[in-house]
Amino acid sequence: MAPDSARSEIVTETRTALVGLSRDALAEAFRAVDEKPFRAKQVWHWIYHRGATEFSAMTTLSKDLRAKLEKHFVVGRPAIDRVQTSTDKTRKWLMQFDDGQKAETVFIPDDDRGTVCISSQVGCTLTCRYCHTGTQRLVRNLTAGEIVGQFMVARDSYGEWPTPTDERRMLSNIVMMGMGEPLYNFDNVATALKIVMADDGIALGKRRITLSTSGVVPEIRRCGAELGVNLAISLHAPDDDTRSVIMPINKKYPLKELIQACRDYPGASNARRITFEYVMLKGMNDTPAHARALIKLTKDIPCKFNLIPFNPWPGTPYECSDAATVERFAQVLWDAGFSAPIRTPRGRDILAACGQLKTDSERLSAKEQRLKDAQEAEAAQAAWAEKEAAI
Ligand code: SAH
Ligand code: SF4
Image 1 (cartoon, rainbow, N blue to C red):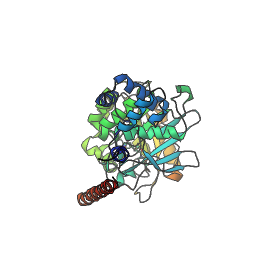
Image 2: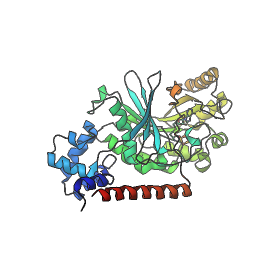
Image 3: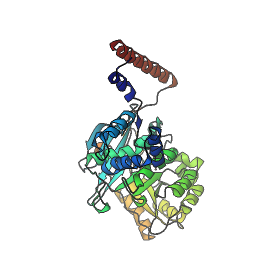
Image 4: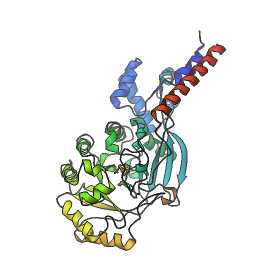
């Protein structure tokens, strides 16, 4: 018979991570270990309001209960593989998840607020030609826990626990604009954002969250109905011919359908406009004629533009439009009454700016995966045999 200590070490690997469980799933996990739903509520508060990473810190729970929870659950946070801080104070984390896969998270501080840019996938299935992430194949979707965990790591890093009132928040906004296409991982993104929005936890309102998509039309509708967060569309061209060259997804969901989904987006109003992101690519999409076509395309949608100077990355086929061209383009939009700020690139020196994120995580071929599985199984057996011998 194995002594408890030896057993518990092995059992540790099978404990359930609580971060990322929806409120109902958390209550269910507690029920499964014969604990009442109100305990789940208390733990939710500790995790998402107070930022506790250990059950031992949850001092409103009895010692026995803390020990029991410790046996069945872990709070769970992504590990930090590397942190870099730019000369402009932008900070980038390379997060490592339990299976060793990695994704990047960026914090962009401003005077009176700060935005955390979160990844939704390791790699991306789409291959937008201007985007560094697009050169990395999709490895996998991130789980809800890994998505909300990125924000929690950022809060740990600035010590922003317990959840401050809105006026005093440094990490005040979230943009789903990191690696990956959030609408191709909608269920996990939705679970994570519902956790982030819950009042008795992180409590970040839907107006402070923006989801950016390359234009996955059916999921835009779900996003509006289920989350109601701000919507940003990577538009980047006013016509199908140009857009299909730089964004292959346009062949599946052409502009007509995309624009209709924007028109239908719930809550879109002058007070709450859709953002059209527009990356300025030299000689590709940056003439005054393109700007005029954009105005025509979006004329009946409450919207604003965000003009993004193209951020280069190693091996890119494009260059950024020169400053005068960007100004001229913006002027056409301004003259037509649109808000169209030219975004100042942040964190370029640490490759943390829009479209520069990429990790060296690679999807294994089926053969490599089988080999890895076999090696892991062998290592686990060896570890177990060693423990057994010590018993
Ligand atoms: N997959 C989503 C969100 C991630 S990309 C999407 O495509 O919208 C976040 C933003 O960065 C998008 O607007 C994208 O078009 C933009 N972007 C990608 N590569 C860029 C680059 N090299 N320079 C500037 N912006 C870029
Ligand atoms: Fe994927 Fe967005 Fe990059 Fe396109 S721009 S490849 S959708 S992450």
